[in-house]
Image 1 (cartoon, rainbow, N blue to C red):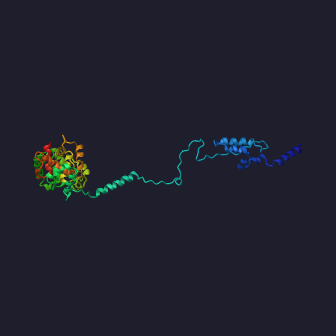
Image 2: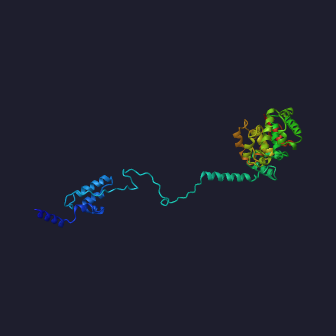
Image 3: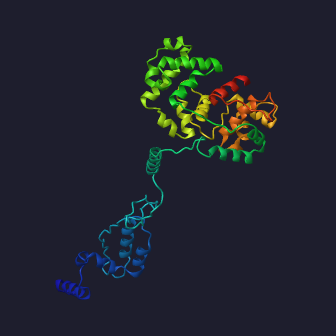
Length: 369
């Protein structure tokens, strides 16, 4: 009996030299090779859903394989599935990952950062401010002739006035600071009263050449009141002097400023309004292209020149006088002459041009107010 059993075992070993124990010790590669083609293809074509489903399919395929003669289920080694970095196990879109700099080509743009643009603009602005502003005055050689030639061609209605009245002249022998103080003293004053107050003011300072920020600041409100200057105008004079003394304004700065900057800076001084600034620009700085839109004499002159029923508004005045550019100061000068001589016939009439033309503008303003 024992001999027959041993003979049966030897027969099995001859038929199957590889024992089940040896099968369990096979490397992982042999396990995949022992799978039948159908099972192997089913495992490969399965969608990678989870590691548990893959292991279950492998066990099922091995259990039904015909290459396992002992019918002993062999548990294969657990196959660990490593997730693909480019996809997730839940088939959800993966979050954006930082790509290496070598994979993305560098794109060079021409955009400049706002900080760079602002700093460059500031550098250009400071450089332009550092350069002296060259502003041609109306009293320059040949400038009046150019202005008259331009006004004749641009506005033929001015030709009779140009032929009748002498050429305009703008004389100013006083400094910008003295001219500004004079403009403050003449505010809301008749021509004679303003002239009398100004002469007493100059005498109080010593002389016209002695009128400076320090001399004005040395005068008290009581001293100014004694010569006819109100307390409000005294504060205006002191504010102007303080801005000069602190360096906010200076004669050199005022002369070199362009028209727009000059209007902005002088408007900061108490008591100096648009009309005073325009008069200062025309008669003291002799700027060629200033239109005093708030001056009643200019508005009345344009009304007479154009035959209007009423005095033009500010916007209408700017539109009507736009063709006078860049010599609107000369056109305004002829409007004052027209209003001053409107009672006498224009043909053959001549008007005296004695004294400062700014005083004449004040006189015209009085007659039209």
